[in-house]
View 1 (tube, rainbow, N blue to C red):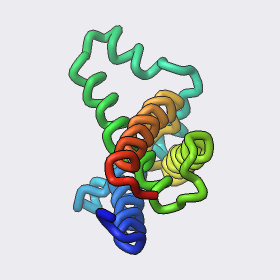
View 2 (spheres, rainbow, N blue to C red):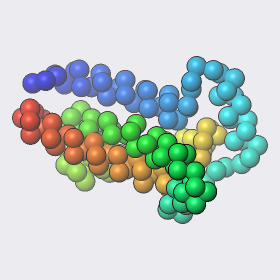
View 3 (tube, rainbow, N blue to C red):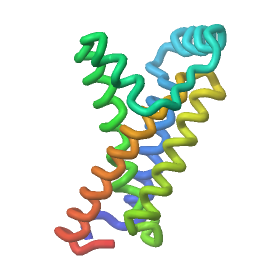
View 4 (tube, helix red, strand yellow):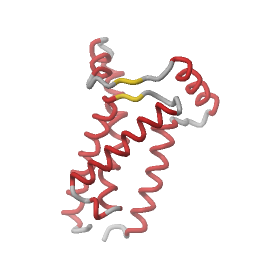
Length: 151
């Protein structure tokens, strides 16, 4: 066994805390920046996009490919571990349907938290990209399980 269950659970808890800090709260060490973000979002009102690919299309149509690329990577990379860790930490959830359902619930919770606490917008494009990254993470889990014969 590469790691025991306790280590995997510890990694999962640390990952979730980091995810909440950097994705939901977006805390970069500057409390004033966080307060300004909340004030700005509160003043502007709720940012909600329920039209798939609208945000990505906006970036691409403005020919701001660097912003689109950063947005896409920023929504994919942080969630790959979620699709990998859920089936390891919760073996009863190790089939793709259960793992993806749990990932989707977590992703939607994050989007709603951002909206409720004025920490960001609630964007279906983020949900789509985050879910794709969970699929990537699950594929890595399958590879890991086959190579190390674990779980």
